[in-house]
Amino acid sequence: MENTSARNYPGAALHPAYFAPGAVSFSEFLGQAAPDLLPGRRFPPEAPVTGAVTHGTTIVAATFKGGVLLAGDRRATQGNIIAQRDIEKVFVTDDHSAVGIAGVAGLAVELVRLFAVELEHYEKIEGVSLSLDGKANKLGTMVRGNLDAAMMGLAVLPLFVGYDPDAADPERAARIVSYDITGSRADEHQGYHAIGSGSVFAKAALKKKFDPAADADTAVRTAVEALYDAADDDTATGGPDLTRRIYPMVVTITAEAGATKWTEEATKAVAEAVVQGRMANPGG
Image 1 (tube, helix red, strand yellow):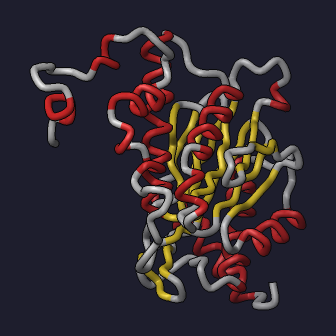
Image 2 (image 1 turned 30 degrees about the vertical axis):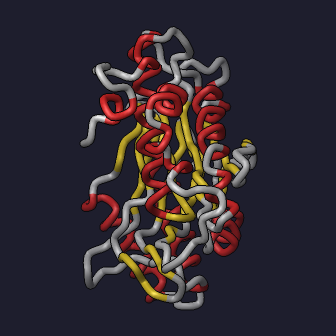
Image 3 (image 1 turned 180 degrees about the vertical axis):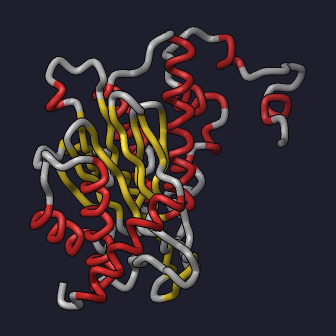
């Protein structure tokens, strides 16, 4: 990688921001030292968006007894074309949080990776993890930083889930937070939510089958059912592909196990059960 510090500051090994006291935010530091590396700064405000852009689609989240889950399909599209069948859209961002992405895939992945670095950087500097509300607010700030690109059609919409192991009320420890393109956050108190092009169909399925007292396995089955319903009616959402062995991605978060990404074998078993159930009852 080119040494931008040496180019912009001849004779200096590091950017002055490295030596200046300030906030513990890594993204704020990056905005000073190398702002062109921030996801939302790649395009000048007047630049037109040309060519096909890859988009990620449907993500669902739901709470269950003792935790929260995040699940997503694997399809990415460019207009009416399938751009990728096995994209990853669900990411563990620290021990007790995860983020799913919808919108422009390239920018969204960069934003989530930067968010994960932000959380790790804060913990290393402060010696403690950022609070759950702090994580949600920080992600909102990062989404707001992409506003110029979003106004050009390059929108990024994350879905944040987390679990607070230190919550006074364990029944309220699991959280789901959604955002709009301005970074404004909304806490989803009903216990489930969905984003992306298939979200209308996924939320309708979750509304009928959501059970806050369900265990993790039952909740994951419900989430995969919701993704199946979304894929049934939304061309941009991909259902379980048993032929290519492509299955939804699932992350569960509990106080005991933290954020756990389910293995392919585990999600395969759930996906195959859902498909078999639909074959026995094609109407739903």
